[in-house]
Image (tube, rainbow, N blue to C red):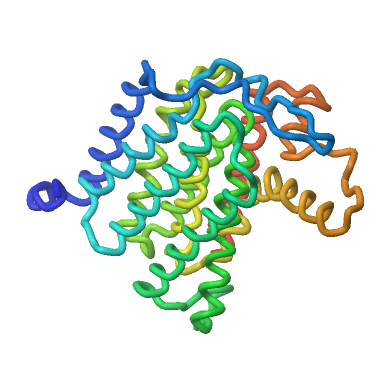
Length: 323
């Protein structure tokens, strides 16, 4: 779109700076006064084992949520306008919008959707993304300086697992002001810088999304006035997974997303083990781990976000050194 007009006079880097700046400004302005149709958090409930209604997210009661719908649309529009288009990129943007829509509908629901419904939706979108990726990129994987070609079926299964895991651990980590946004920015910028030569125009996805999230953090840092909701966190997780796949070093996801894997992933693992074994597991530790720090150890919310962001910087540096 605009890229074809601008590229005749400007370099790709200049166009990316313009796109990132406009995306930042648009997000900042839109979130200054969120639209009235967005849902308000608080009042949601889950049903416990005894059948009682248990309130969730009580600390966010009354805050506007689901603003991820707004900044995801801004991000997608900026990408489509300012990056060179291809059918592959359009497919990924369409999947990003679908990911946002499923999350937004959950944000609007009075009671959170069941795990089965959300899990199946995530699985379907992850399968579509994995198939699209293999069609356009093949199945070669770089690991410790060597390149391997993985059988298509196995690669698709592994890619689906990576995408599904990234969506869910990112979503689980969005529980305190500033945490998910700040860690995501560091991770996306890290991927875009470390693998810039490999990613090409896809490095622009990470940079544009990062600038959008910086604007979001202006309102989400403690004490927050808006929340991204599943509409934002699920799309962030999807984008991180996509970028890791596009690097050709998909196993870098383990290091780059270690903060999310520890914070949200261990909670998913704990739940899975309890349901499979019907026995208690890690009963003295709350998950996501930010809840352990906030509720049991009485850490201040800004401190939790700053520590997690600092740890993410360390893992990005380690990834740069290893790769």
